[in-house]
Length: 136
Image (cartoon, rainbow, N blue to C red; front, top):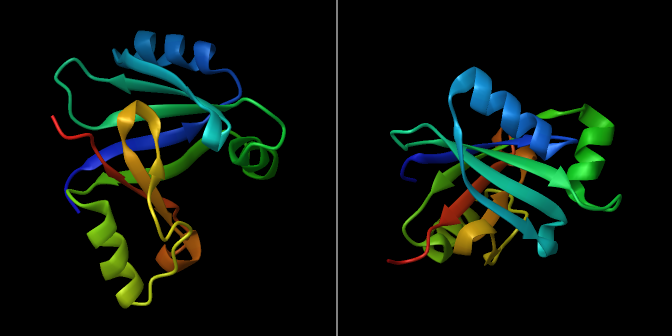
């Protein structure tokens, strides 16, 4: 694992939360995207100096995992995402260690990333995402 890439928050209204975080925390929206595969509208907010971002996730349908999360737990922290150089190698290593995975193969994520999730039961109830950023 490298750095924390982002902390994701499940929200009902992404536009309202963007404005709140811009005003209160000085964060700036650097990317917006609809990720159909995951049923979400995503927005990345960063401090001017960069570093770890806040990702806002708004469901785009009632069957979205984020919609179900909000129904069950309310708005708030959904997952923590770590950057990895090689997501496939990271998944193989975790599986060999007996870590329960949600995704055994990477899937497309926001902003050109490849992502995979570790099951929260494997890590004390915390949902962890791994993300391999696009090569530059």
